[in-house]
Amino acid sequence: MSNKEHDVTRRQFLNYTLMGVGGFMAAGLLTPMVRFAIDPLLREEKGGKMVDVMAVKDITTEPQRKTFSIDKVDGWHKFKEQKIAYIFKKDNGEIMALSPVCTHLGCTVSWNDDPAHPNQFHCPCHGGRYTKDGINIPGTPPPAPLSVYEMKVKDGRLYLGAEKPRGGA
Amino acid sequence: MLQKVYDYIDERLDITPLWRDLADHEVPEHVNPAYHFSAFVYCFGGLTFFTIVIQILSGMFLTMYYVPDINNAWDSVYYLQNQVAYGQIVRGMHHWGASITIVMVFLHTLRVFFTGAYKKPRELNWIVGVLLFFVILGLGFTGYLLPWDMKALFATKVGLQIAESFPFIGDWIKLLLQGSDIVGAQTLARFFAIHVFFLPALLMGLMAAHFLMIRRQGISGPL
Ligand code: HEM
Ligand code: FES
Image (cartoon, rainbow over all chains, first blue to last red; front, top):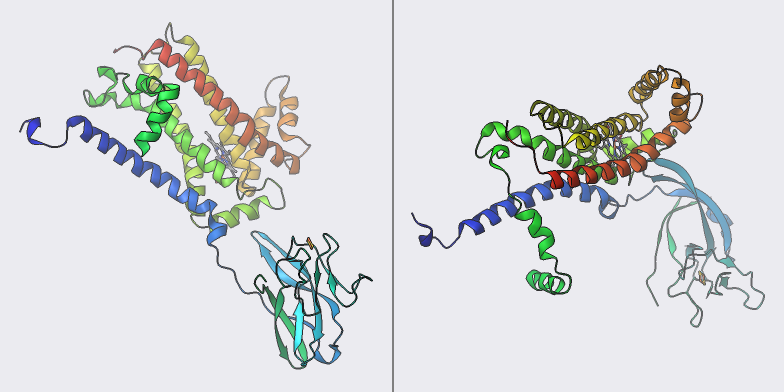
């Protein structure tokens, strides 16, 4: 057969085979390494265990600051992570547990420590404020309400789990 | 699209001659296994380079998880191998690749020796080659300590005692490498620095010199 009967020239054929084989080898090398590097992106979050934080009968309508610790696994490092929750009963009697992590840039808010704005959560970093229910007050920096902890009540004790964000407002 | 990007750059920087120079470089008949199968021995240099590329790439990725600290090194290697996706493969590439690299360097050296390619005017490149060989052995030695298991510890103790047996300055070499009076925290930190910064930098410099000299002198003629 002569070259003229084919649509592919010898040069093209060599180009394609070289690029094909080279591409195959490069992909074989890089795929495992790239997948290895992006592992944190594709890891599924494991729901942690709920932790016993306080007795339900001690919960008041005034937010109380409670600390508790959860078992945290960070790669090869296992440790107890300290958590803070502001726990109170809403007017309708429902229990609420707020995370004090400011939704602006992550500073820690405190309850009722700003004399100019009593009975609010206040963030020291850029003056973010939230109502008692953790709703961000318009005109202050935070873009969303404080996260709430997942909770359950068992045998008169309050257990807290992961914090759930409540979307932007 | 790609062609357009290429043309845009080429129009401004005239990059075609840069790669054309390599692409049009003819492979002499006596080193081309397509003509004489026995010419495959001329592939070992390129294969050494290929395995070094694998070592550098897989090593860079390993450092994303590895930590050079006596309390965490072993756990970090265990984690990256068993918990991270493809960890076993990436560590395996580096682990087996290290041995294959050394085998390839050795075979390449044998080829150069038995074809007499080290003779004038290529003596300087033989010297650079020997330095490359030592740098690669150094990478193997310093890398071996990093997983911080028993095998790593005792292999390093033995290696350091070999260094200690060097006449006159042996004690001094050992202390310098060990960084302490025992194989411990400071040894691991040092070996890590040598393994991932100092020797790879040297390796790349020497490889550049090696290849420039080959381009300058051409490959040695047939037997
Ligand atoms: C010719 C080049 C190289 C050789 C021969 C080599 C050799 C080795 C060896 C023998 C080990 C022990 C592996 C094991 O026992 O599983 C090791 C570990 C390691 N190397 Fe290299 N290496 C090279 C280049 C590099 C480079 C360029 C880097 C980083 C930029 C690197 C990073 C590492 C790391 C982080 C470890 C510890 C992780 C582990 O042990 O699996 N290596 N190397
Ligand atoms: S971090 Fe709280 S207001 Fe900016």
